[in-house]
Image (cartoon, rainbow over all chains, first blue to last red; front, side, top):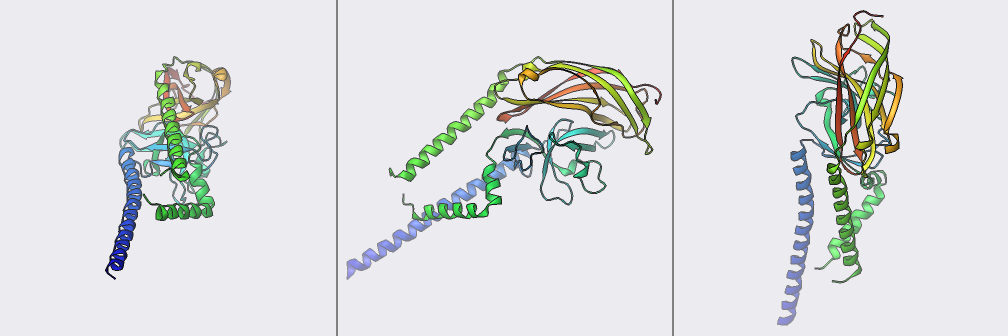
Length: 180
Length: 167
């Protein structure tokens, strides 16, 4: 009877080790993704260093599904820059171009007006009711780099959550069943 | 070890790496281009010049813009966004930038152009400082790449002056 007990023990220990390895490797993947994201936040100084373009208001420059890399430096905002801003009362940030800048002599505060390249008029209609200008605190970052198409992955996942669940399920299954 | 999954994974990883490398190289190759653009702007007419009821000065003008931006285009250029801004100082504001006209140049063939236009966006000051105001007209351009880093530069054309009286 001794050898049966031994083999059962070995199987048990093997499974525990395997489960532990898989848990650790899964944890590594999640934490390294988090580390990269937080490091990007530190380097770029923007709270969301990468954004996906959701609307066609900047076409043909930026199409839906393109990715923009943001940077938020201390440099003053100037006309022509493409900025990402949040308007009070709107959840989704907007990516548009600055067309007018008024910078105060004494305080250095700025009044900024934006417009989408593909829109006919300026953005005052999008701003909060009665708001004429954007201030510095509305602006989350300026676009410095561009990568086409990659953002479609997130657009598809947010609009068709089923695909997201299938993908997560398949990956989970792969992690559980894989033996290396 | 040599299962379908592993091979597909290796192929995918390799393809994505190569693609990322090619994008990075295309973006870096833009640095070898040293453009020599040129621009001229004439203010042909001040159409009207008045004080709005809320106290802000507004001016409407007719502009003649000609520019040659062909040297900005490289193989990684998707389009060039070009705009003309009036820039001036007032006692209250250390910088005012007002875009007067803008355009999107889709290709090198369209990059040498000539346009006769009145200002596309309203030229309104924050306050009433525009009478006799000296200002710069600045041609800015933003090069949008097919992939990678965006470039921007400008030509400043100083020495324009608005009329002393409303009209």
